[in-house]
Length: 255
Image (cartoon, rainbow, N blue to C red; front, side, top):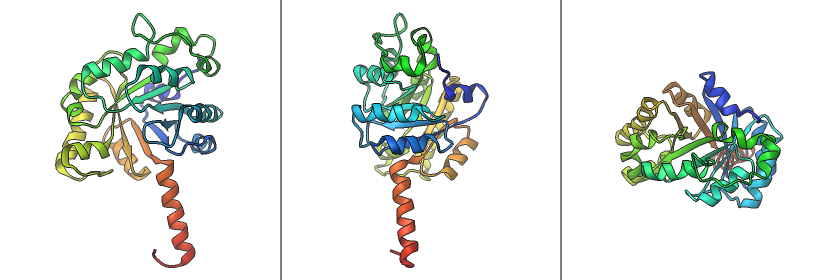
């Protein structure tokens, strides 16, 4: 089976850098895959992407050195299976609020006897190889998002779930849950403590810890804090920022 670059990086003790595709377009996904990142995550939750477009984006990413990931919109077993069958090599599941919820997520991504995933990898065979079924369970990556009050309260138990590779922090939603505020790089002490609690829980359980960042500079700082899966903002946010900066430069004034 084709190796998973994310697991290879982790095995070497190196952090993983992920691009994040909110724009539902295979061309932008392909550009992201050639940017030097380790993986590209297609966002099905908040991105402007449907299933058909997701498949085209996974195909585009597969032509690059990056590993294809999908952030599903919910812990829906059918959608998790479809994302993996379409060739995703990693899945990020949002709004995980308990160990039981995390276990349901993991079960949907693993074949019996360790899970309930049904057989039908379709494009997964094309991308992964003919021996996909024999090696999929240990090759694919599973990250549970911690972004709610219930998820924070259960984070230690979530990290103990067998088969879960790690957690992924959504700072925006975590800030909303704790403070009623949305902050990508929170400085609020309560939110900062919550993020550190998540990181500590993951490390104590021998799991990986990821976080969404507003920039590469912030991602580098998070890596210094021992996060080993960092997102360097979304393609939509980066495009908007770049276009705004260029428009201001062209006008020669601050808009």
